[in-house]
Length: 78
Image (cartoon, rainbow, N blue to C red; front, side, top):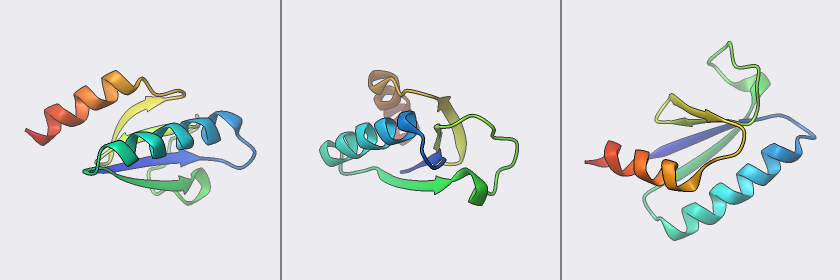
């Protein structure tokens, strides 16, 4: 399952969320993290970063609640 994290340069929240997701993915082998700059992101209209998408559907802005993310991923996989 693909997780896409939309970030921008010099964003401490973006770096924090990226590190959090990388750690989560190391525990869960079924997730693939794609990190992309907001300027290269094909879905226009995103103005807040970090923004996390699950399979091209917006999941959240800002910090990620891991429990909710894991629950959402589990529901999508079944």
